[in-house]
Image (tube, rainbow, N blue to C red; front, side, top):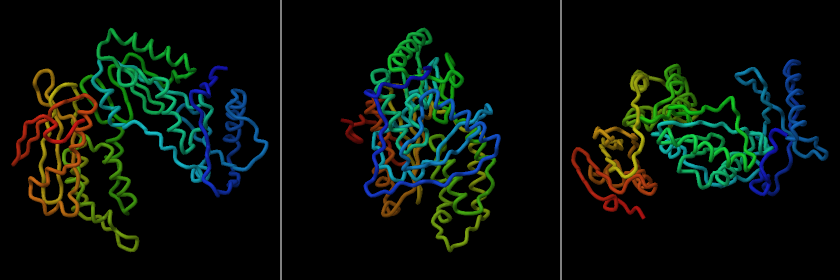
Length: 386
């Protein structure tokens, strides 16, 4: 009774199947007796809450994957890999995570809410569960999103530019949740805070910071001994790419290793270790990126080498001090390597971020500067914004 779930007319998770796929019945796994006891307790709880029921006609069987949470309790996850391969992808558009982070930063006060997965009676781990969850969130908060609510699946931020507005914003958000039967996990919520973790970053009034756990994971990573380990390291670094000046230039030395074929030997040389140490040294003191300010001019600084192009998006703050809001970079490919400096700047795909910010209402003009090129113009002179 505590979590009745949402009205099926609002959202309902469906499992369409790819034609011709045969059901898979996974062989049962063995667990220790103490784990089995906790699994039974959790199954009884789910049965009592009517989140699950006994199957009468079994076609698909998926194994339980017990996961011990930080508080010592057990979460019953399911190995849905076979079922997910037989389910077509739900193409419902998901929010752009970086956009949500940009929008959530710059608030004087905020509350971070954590949704409870079970309210939809939809098991965690299904291929399209995230799309169904996001569809429900968009329907519930449709007219509040972008004003003072940001929602990415089950992560919700209610942010207020002025402290005195926050209780009103929370009230409106809670009324909407109550109307649709949406429950939050109080143990994972933070109310009236000036800073908080959102989508892997720390957001606050002054901007966006790197989560120390993310940099710690990189600092503690041992030098890769194979291609797979290098790919994992690059993935961790790329997550923080918006904070890193000329990341492509810092990682280009790894490109030959990433192109190795199975039969080729992986050799981690001094040049690779030196580049790795440079990245760790940079991330020891990463910059704090400024929050975007609507209506202010964007500045884009760009530079190019023989193999990379890099840039920095910036804005002046209220005190007239220029602050970085985003670092950009990428490798030059194909014929771009033979371009002249001016030709290299022109097709910079990252200029689409100026286009995006313009569409979002953050700016109507931009200044582009480089060592050989300086342009101050309306954004329309660089690319159309309508």
